[in-house]
Length: 68
Image (cartoon, rainbow, N blue to C red):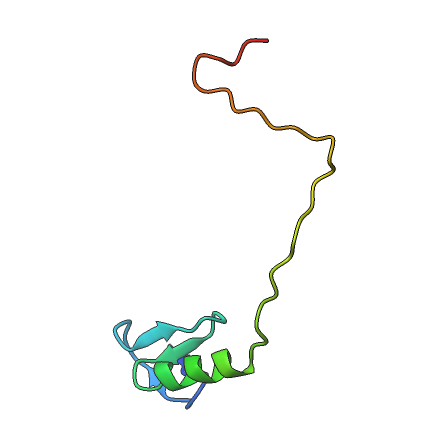
C-alpha cells in the first residue's frame, strides 16, 4: 500500500490512487489541489528559437521519389 504524498492518507485500492504531473502518488481527494500547487511553482517554459545556417536547403521527396 502506498501513501498520498500530499495528505499522507493510506491508499488502500487502485481507485483512490492518482498520479500527479511530477509522478508522485496522490489520493483522489487532493489531486486537484496538489496539481494546482505544482503549476503555480513551475516557471513558464521559454520557447527556444532555432536558426539554421543559411546554406541549408530542405527538399521534400515523397513516396517513390527517394532515388538520386
